[in-house]
Amino acid sequence: MSAAGGKGLSLATRLYKSRTLGLTLGFICVAAAIYPLDKPAWVWVVMVTNAFIWPHVAYQWSRHSKNSLRSEHRNLLFDSFCGGFWVGAMQFNPLPSVTTLSMMTMNNVAIGGPRFMLAGWVAQALGIGASLLVFTPAVTALTSEAQLYACLPILMLYPLALGWICYRQAITLARHKRELLALSRTDSLSGLLNHGAWKDHLEIEFQRCRRDQQGAAIALIDIDHFKTINDTYGHVTGDIVLRQLSKVLRQNLRATDLAGRYGGDEFCVILPDMPLNRAAEVMDALRDRFNSLAYAQDPTLRASLSIGLAPYRPAHGDATSWLNDADQALYEAKSSGRNRVSSVQGSWLRSI
Image (cartoon, rainbow, N blue to C red; front, side, top):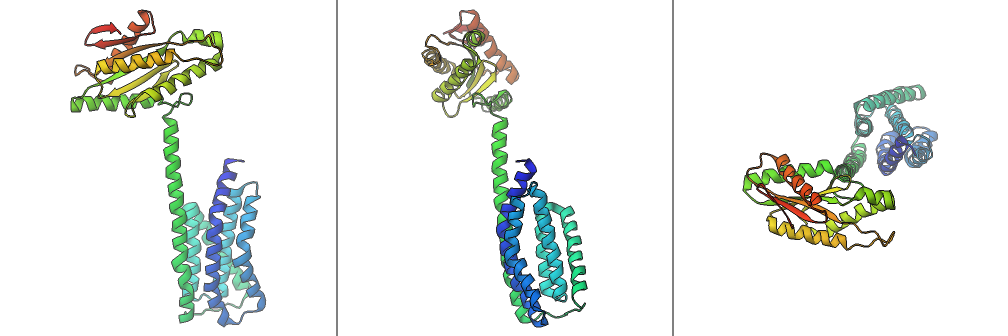
């Protein structure tokens, strides 16, 4: 289904109940104004058809249309045309006429904005013109007490129904926005933060450490010989290894820790309020846990990790210099034989 078709079908579904309610309440309003005018029987047949059959026809028309959105817009313009027609049939009785036209206009502006509102006004004018051709032009200048009370249900209930629909739509849109934001900040393969999102959190953590004079550590994690794994076992197996590492990270880190995929086979972790010695213990346990994993795809496959750790230091000028320390420690871990944790403390490097 096309995007326009899906959007239109969603719109038709939302409007089905509101159209059914609005035309039912509108029937009470219009009938009270038409009744004293002694209109012929066919007018009542058309009114009943418009109020109680048309909503279901409109919905089915939109559902089975190739372009549901365009079809529903036509339905709304037909609603406006009918509203204008009944205004003329009521001989422009003030309160029922204003109620009918304003409810239609409110519907149109809520669905299509100012441009569609103008299109609705044109449809209403055409409906009034058609009514003047069918009926003898006349004006009823006064609204009776009974007609006033007949207008109250639609004046009270229809705006409430439309407001509820708009509220539900706003809630749905807000949820979709949150989901899209989460997707835009999540790495699709690992389910962890992506590169940009993790660096945003790193900047926030750096500013927090500087402001509150608190400690923290960051870790850069590299899967040893990952290219060889891809070349030997295939890229599908390589993806499984990446997902296994992300799973181990989620299982072994605190809820406050922030893990991400930095790029390729490199991962990154922010460890707030954690001293270097404790961070080294956590990362070494994680390394050991990952080393012990077995892979059903090939029992001979074993993967190991090189990890570089860097604590926050007041001497860091910015988050990038902090990250450079972790990168330097990772380089030390890889150049010292891999499958180990190296950390940087001041200008000193050590392997654990």
